[in-house]
Image (cartoon, rainbow over all chains, first blue to last red; front, side, top):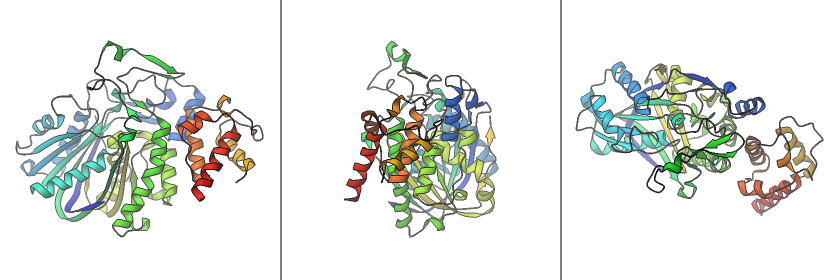
Length: 347
Length: 81
């Protein structure tokens, strides 16, 4: 656990594809399965990017509007991070392309980070640390995924869960502090995995052969596989204790926090975590119903869609918690003070 | 912890099950209502009620509701020892 002082979160924007799909219309599950799925996961509707719209496009739109609204001087942005598991290319890094598209200076550090559900918390940490060490005035944290492009539509264990979103977060030097707790466990590397396409299993014609795993689960080896039980148990085991430990580290209690914003995994899991922490339901906002699990973008998506008014008008104490693929998990505790929080952008 | 209580909670968490129809010897994975989502619901229930974790291996190895109860009971005993 550690604290980064002198950095604050000053602006936030999220963009999602216009296209909505309802899990009630999902064609590869029975009506009863769909009813149980929606009731248990809390995910009724999702946003799906059309072919060609990437995570970097969603983040770009969010960033452009955020920079415009905050009248940010682009030359002051010294760090650009793009956190995603769905980059535009394997080579080159998408962040460097985004640096050019956004018109940021060539002296702006730009790098990709490959993380999913824990990515927003890790991004806040890396950005805070880089701003401190480089002396840059501002940093732009872009976090998002188009997960719909890497799941098989015929896989009822993944397709109805994931939704697409991109976010932009502006961070400034200030007198605030942010507390972090970051963890990983590579033993669970294959709990969420796309088997083929990297160098361990290069893509081949066999990678694209569709295989029926069981009723309602059909995919090839370029699609995302999730071991639901392992991920569920990992989250039950690690998330609540990590939040408790970070609260204790910075001398706070759950009552000192205005809102606990968790990665939007699914309602069953998130409610189990909320109950372990004995937090009142009104302190735990959800965006699951209409935006599903937006992977790395789920925390900013929840902030923008559920807490925009409070973020804009009030001083808030927030606990943010991301957990998932890696396995990786992280918690951050920070204060925000009337930040520029834009309305949800639809493109 | 009693097997009867475990069965009552198990029934309450399963969709479309008439109370009283689940027996200790019921092979739960053969129930029409059983699926991967119900497995997660069961794990959450056991975690909340008994404070122990059912693994994928446990669910694979257990055949009857009674088997599941024994696993939960053993884990609870280890936890409390």
